[in-house]
Image (cartoon, rainbow, N blue to C red; front, side, top):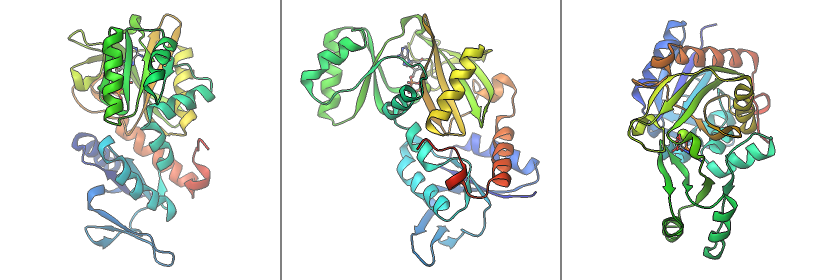
Length: 309
Ligand SMILES: Nc1ncnc2c1ncn2[C@@H]1O[C@H](COP(=O)(O)OP(=O)(O)O)[C@@H](O)[C@H]1O
Ligand SMILES: [Mg+2]
């Protein structure tokens, strides 16, 4: 069936264009909706979503969200309105929000028995020394709770450096977590792209300049990787733990087995070292097909989509 698809976007041109191309190739009608041009009327009798001032709530059967980190709050407010007006969305605002919070995500992994590096969190300066001890002392990793693309992820080599970073971010009221540094995996990680209950593509990333962070945005390079059965299970359990359908799971290989470090919602798949180029998998096509199938099968995702509760 020909669908009217809206890509709710914050302007990531390469991925947006791939999704438009993939939807058009499959005979759908597709439009990019920049969240900054959307506005809402949350009205009991006549709710509406406006695009550049014109009502659009009757124009779409399906919304695929692509919301980047700086625009999470506004983007999710718009997405929630589509959900509230019973327009099908390929992921829920709830799951997207969970994926943006590294601490909440880790706590969901704990609840669902998915392995991850030991993580500490504290409010008061007096507790810093203790949480540093719980993650195995220095060197350790410090992460801003809402960081992305390696920005906001630090390696503290000694105690003085670690405490200084913790105190600095405390002063700035920026929430962070401390995490055990998995030295044996330093500089490399695995990105597995999940759509529904399937891992459609995965790659190994390696930093090219000795950085402990493997992010492509920081100059990392990638190659195709085959995941073990255990790794595949862990990846799928991780996305189910936060109720997300489309996500990029970051995994590291430790001496004690695979560990999930992050679940990226609205993950990128373009670029020279991105998943589509490296694996030749049509990620955009798989996203469109999955979303269309879900929309055909389920009429109201407020009850039918996976929900982490
Ligand atoms: N606990 C850790 N031990 C070793 N390396 C890590 C650890 N956590 C993160 N890294 C490295 O840092 C990179 C960025 O961390 P990640 O948690 O994925 O944050 P971001 O959202 O910035 O990508 C990872 O891809 C990995 O290479
Ligand atoms: Mg990451």
